[in-house]
Amino acid sequence: MKTAILAEGLKKRYRETDALAGVDLAVSTGSVLGLLGPNGAGKTTTVRVLATLLRPDAGRAEVAGADVLTRPDEVRRRIGFTGQNAAVDALLTGRENLVLVGTLLHLGRSAARARATALLEEFGLTEAADRPIGTYSGGMRRRLDLAACLVGRPSVLFLDEPTAGLDPVSRMTLWQAVRRLVDDGVTVLLTTQYLEEADYLADQIVVISAGQVIADGTPDELKRKIGQEWLEVSVLSPASLATALAVLAPLAVAAPTVDEAKNKIALRLRDGMEGVVSVAVSLRDAGVDITDFALRKPSLDDVFLALLGHPTTQP
Image (tube, rainbow, N blue to C red; front, side, top):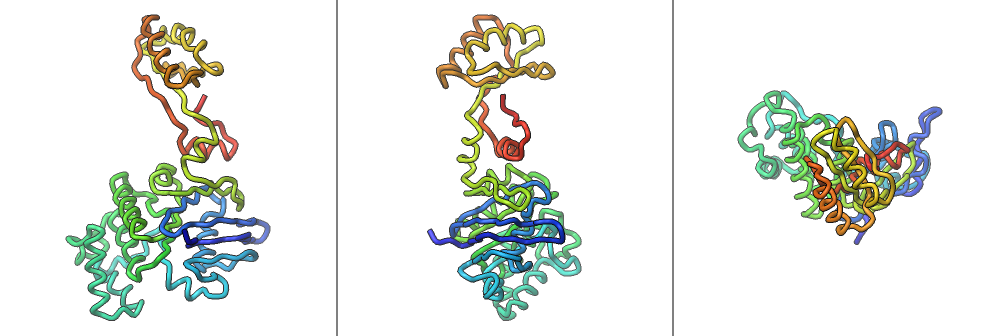
């Protein structure tokens, strides 16, 4: 596949702070890259460099086939960008906002109105199209903001924490809109603080910390790196914990962990699925009443915490 976004050795320094200390990344055309990291890691700086809003101190980058340093105008013609706040004019209607963008992009009045109508329908905003933006909910504003980025039909889209502050329903609506764009061939670079968002949307994850890439891979690859699945058993009463622990310890790879506040035991099994059956039978024979019994897989939360040197939720 062609590479839609390429960065090599990007560096950016602010006084005594290295915001970027040599960032490398590559994003295939028609895919989603999730850029993760703690606050101040360099995510927004990376996006701003790639979107030609900042000039790097060192390194090179190409976006949609154009060099960000030598052909910035061409890059801007080929990309869309949404920041952390919806950039819409609250005094205009939704339709007027989109027509204005189309006019600024020299689509012509008729073409701008046609494009606005199509995007309003695509993002479920037709009924609110002629209402002032001041009457829109936060989710509606974010959808309109995304629609505005698409007026010029960009091939690459930068989304910098696009769902910050949205409720779960609005967040899912925006996720589905992004997936439709990717299905149509748009390449997306997404920064987010919501790890479930990256897990849902991203084909590839890059984790940065202190301006450097510390991990790169698909979500499943990163999860596998920090360990396999484990079993969690919750018992009915605190009095059953000791009995359950005695039953489970011989079946575990290492000593199980116990959460007395939740009457929960977590353990890695020796024999995979056969071990799950052995646990269930052993608990039944010991007369232990359970309230929850489930295999858990590592999440991106576990990956994120493990990479940054914090304990994971696993045993």
